[in-house]
Image (cartoon, rainbow, N blue to C red; front, top):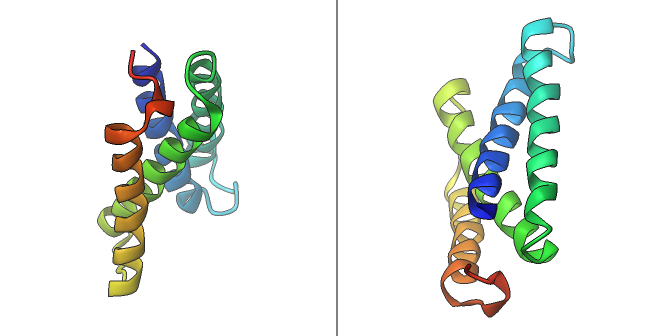
Length: 110
């Protein structure tokens, strides 16, 4: 169940971060509600995963996958483009998450 909570926490954080740009400095109420609600849900679910999984591993996965998904959301919704170095760097972050998932005993696959 902790992996589901982590996945939903990541999606909530990505949604909140993406809405942050649309909130126009919290001057637009709709996106601002999405930002606050998304971050609140994300942090709550993230805290639930910490009852079972190590904080360093959880945070690495949460932030690494979040970076990749926010980058994708920026491309799709805001037409933001990245140069080769940025793409390589983000790929390295995602690669680190994959290594943690596949090879680390610290993850505690239950």
